[in-house]
Length: 156
Image (cartoon, rainbow, N blue to C red; front, top):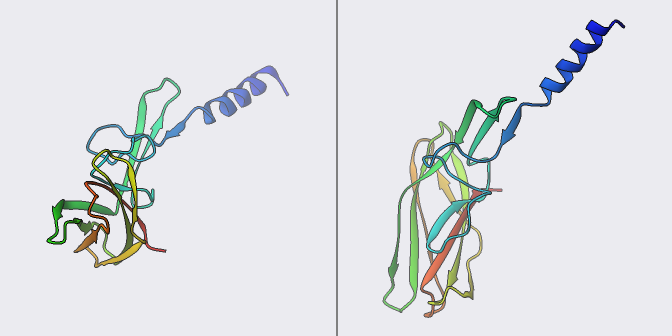
């Protein structure tokens, strides 16, 4: 093998490994998942098949391509006190696909000092029709609950 062929082969191998995919996002408009810190009173997608942004970077670190997958979005959400003194969290979920989806949600509740209570719901399945909406709703058991975190994943 001559030097020119060896150089060309080495360059192809080197450059093919330089493109990388990052699991971060390019702007604040896209959902952040693995790099996002947990925040009280928040809703998050823990299943990357529901919302994810792939960023391909070139050899020099510039962005070559972004590919965003968004199947589900949260149209509106809130929390309210119930007559029994507990709290109820809710989220209106929108299916952005042309086919029916199943999503599961789980709520965790925390006291006024943001300490976790032994108050975590089971995974609750929500069916969302194609291009439609559905409501996820969960209540705390404890009267001490003041804060919450809700996680969503694709139905299994």
